[in-house]
Structures are given as C-alpha cells and as structure tokens.
Length: 315
Image (cartoon, rainbow, N blue to C red; front, side, top):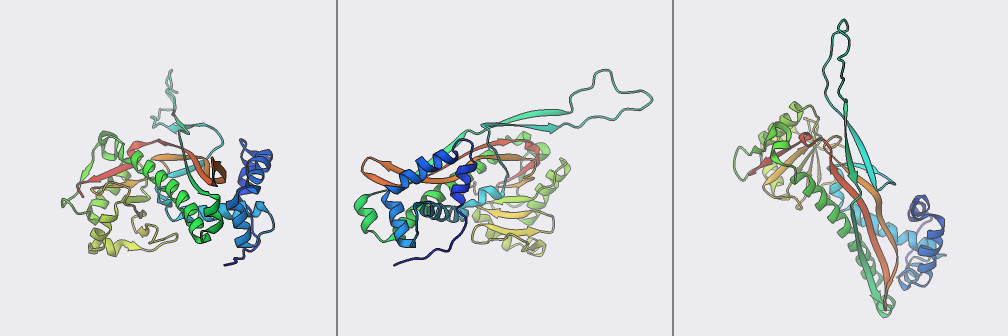
C-alpha cells in the first residue's frame, strides 16, 4: 500500500539542531548519513512517497512520539523541566519569622533558601532492529508497530520511575507526617481523597493531581460523593488515564503501574521534578547484520518538597 504524507515540520531535525551535544554535524553524519544506507528508512521513503531521507527520519520520529503520548501518564503527575545540563540546582524558600522594625533585624539572619540538586541520572534505550530480508518483505504496518512499541516502552519506564519516586517518600516526610488509612479497607472513597487533599492544604500546598491505580477507578465511580464532585475539564483523555477534575481543584490520573493499595495526592508544582535532558529520540542504528532504529531517552528525577505529597494506604 502506497501512503502519502503532507509537508510538515521536521521536529526531529529541529530537536537535533538545537541540542548542544548534537547539532548540525551530528544531523548530517549520525542521522542523514546513516539513514541513507538503512533499509528501514529507505522503506519508509517508499511507503510514504518521500523525496529525501530527512523526511523519512522525521516520519519515523513522529510515529514514535505519537505512540509514546498514549503512555505518557507519568508526565501528568510531575513538574517537567527541560534542561541542557547534567545537574540542576533548585532553591527552595524557607519560612522565616517577622521582626519589629523598632528592634531592627536580628544580628544573625538565617538563610531563607535551601538548595536541592537533581541529577540527570536516567538513560534508557530500546531498539527496533530487523534483518534486511525482514525489512524488505514484511508488511510495513508490522515495522511501524515495532517502532511504536519501542517508544511506548520508554514512556512506560519513565512512568514507573516517577511512580517509584512518590512511593519511595518515607511516611514521616509526607503531608501531615504520616500515611492516611482508607476509611474502608480495600476501597478508595471520596472521603479518603478529601482527607489527603486537606493534609496537603494544611501543609501549605495546593494539590492538583490524584494518582490512583486502575483498580480504584471503579471504587470512585461507585461513590456518589465522588460523582457529584467530578467534572470533565480540559485535557481529559479517559483512554490514556487522565479522567478529569474535581471541584476541589485536582484531576484524577490512573495507571496500573502504581501499587494497587495506595493513592497519592500531589502538588506537582512543588512536590518533585522531572528534568528532561533528552526527550524520546529516534536515530538510525545497525548491529551486526540487523538494521533499524534505536529509541533513547534521558532524564532526571528528584523530590523537592516531600510534604507536598499525601498518601492513602489500604485502599
């Protein structure tokens, strides 16, 4: 089947040219140069009737990124900060005390900030490699699916790491200084979410996301109090797992990658950060007698204010 593709931005080329570790020379040598002799990209040019290999590079990238978006729940529960550095320092303000003007400031004024360093320590890759005969003969839909699977696995890993970050916060560091036990063991209720919401608010934050397991969605839809508080706001994608918002100001995000008996209420602007050093990148790849594409991603994760997170357990 011959496909057609309309002229559009080559997002991959733009990303490579802007990356200080890559740039124009890398685009010419490591991307365009290698793609010319790569059967996967030659097949892409043929299937989509493309005039040059740069367009094929861009098309394969678009296939991967669009597929990854369908697994991108991890990005909905954390603050994302693009970076070009291997480490970023965050300055967190500390609560001070006022003083009488007549008395003047104290002789020794403590620092009003504390620094938290977050390193870019996560890098993953996954390949879609095939023999030349496979690339020449197999239906192109199968090849596309392999590229999409590679990108989705990377996005799934990112979500796993984000979930592990929140679930790894010690109970004593959470909002309220402890975990919140569900009112009815084995069931997540609206009242439990309200308790967690209140704990984060009392700690001085504004929770904007509830991260729950897929098994707990049915619990909430059977709770009239939740249904009456729920509405579908902007950015809702039920198939993805972003269910909508409540009148308390937080949206519901569900994923089966978190622990079934736990739920988290998070102020994503304060609780933790995802440093994105290199978003999903696709490039030509060869390994012995196989050719194809390799997908990579590089990022960092760190908690900032742990008490901007509340955890419900036994739910």
